[in-house]
Length: 159
Image 1: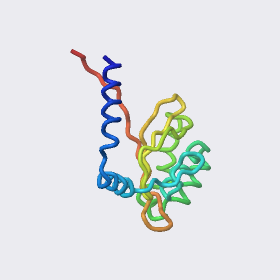
Image 2: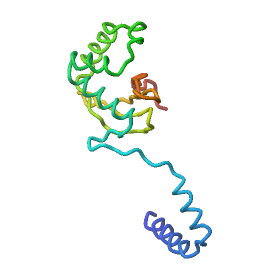
Image 3: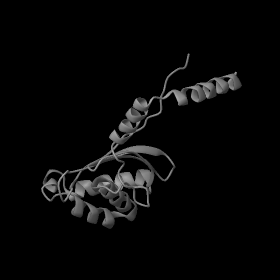
Image 4: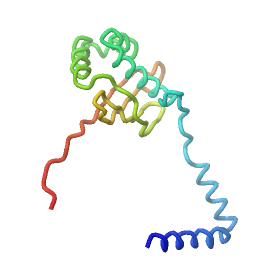
C-alpha cells in the first residue's frame, strides 16, 4: 500500500510540475515574499531581539544563583514595579522555583517577536516546559513578565 501511495504522489508531482502557469509561479513567489522575516538567531539559539536577549539573560540569571537573579531583576524591572511586588517576594519565588526545577536550558523557540518569545525550557530533570517572556515595546525594553505553563499529566480512562 505504501509503495502505491508513493507512486501516486510521485505521479501527481511529476505531472503537475510542468502544468504550473507563470501566473501560479508568480503567486507562489509573492506569497513567499509576504512571509514575515524570521528574527535573527544568536549562536546560542535565542532570537536576537529585545525579548530574546532578555529571555537569555533571565535563564542565565536563574542558573547563576540568587545574586545573579537579583542583579538581573534590578536591571530589567522598573523600580516602580518593586512597590507592587518587592524584591524579597520576587526572590522567594525564585528560590522556590530554583529548588523545584534546578538549572534550566533552552530546548527550542516556539515563536518570536521583538517583544515576546515563547520557548520550550528544559529543567534539570529533563522536563520541557513552555515559557513566555514579554518585554515592553520601547527602550529600554523593561521586562513585563515571565510566564511558565504548568503541564499536568492527564488522568482518566481510555475506552
